[in-house]
Image (cartoon, rainbow, N blue to C red; front, top):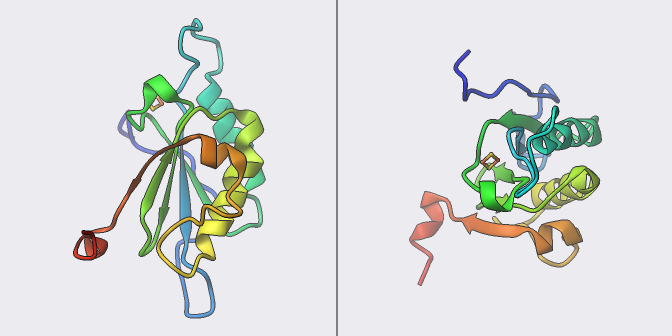
Length: 144
Ligand code: FES
């Protein structure tokens, strides 16, 4: 396995979507993140968040996958969310305590009627920690 290839994945079957199911959401957690200005620890905060999010996602249909870096190191711990047909989101400044909020946000995103994660009802950690949202190629034509 390549050094930067994902190694953690759960919730088999979450990747497929039928007309009766909401679009699949994948949560990418940077397992390499550590706190800025704090010396390296044995287990990185990103790895601890990955474990907590993986546990919080059990039986939700949300896929969780660890990645090595999301290029948001200065504002980590970082998480990205991807949804079929939806915009992509990058969040930062998260910690283990954010795991429930991350999965609640992923479920909100999965059931959204449009390609966005609604702001109303979005958990506080994902309001405060929003770094970027990125349109799909299909949505570029709709931008001003
Ligand atoms: S190490 Fe986590 S975003 Fe770079």
